[in-house]
Length: 195
Image (cartoon, rainbow, N blue to C red; front, top):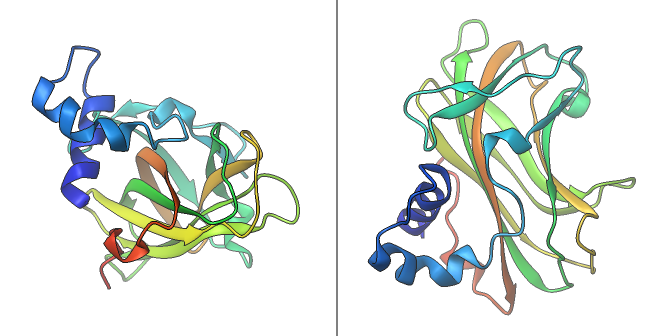
């Protein structure tokens, strides 16, 4: 699954040129499961005075990222990066969130940081559909959250969110994918964050 996600992200992010037919045929089904707009331009950052702009970023697919300098807050969602989700989610659907992330500047005295990430209702009460915490360091890596929807959500009623105010740190965020695997999907097949 991880290799498939990498291939799909590469197809979507690297260029507008046609992808090799074999890759497209193999990943056609998974591409149809994407319910958000993965490019870095889709990030919206809450809790900052000036929105970060995408910049060149070597080592991540698409070679673009946003950079956010975060300050620790009592509530980690005080500063959050979000992307809207255009696709609908039905009760019982299995959802996977995959986000490229790294630390530009880690918290003092540490090399890594844990970032809460989730797919959620876009308005109060912000019900979680998928949530987890991924540990990131100086190298780009994909972090994940997955879950099964407990209710129906129309397109545009959900978003993905990465909570950044877990510490004083500078976080780089690359592309993010939200995939809807539908009903009765075996969630054990989905990638998980490494401890």
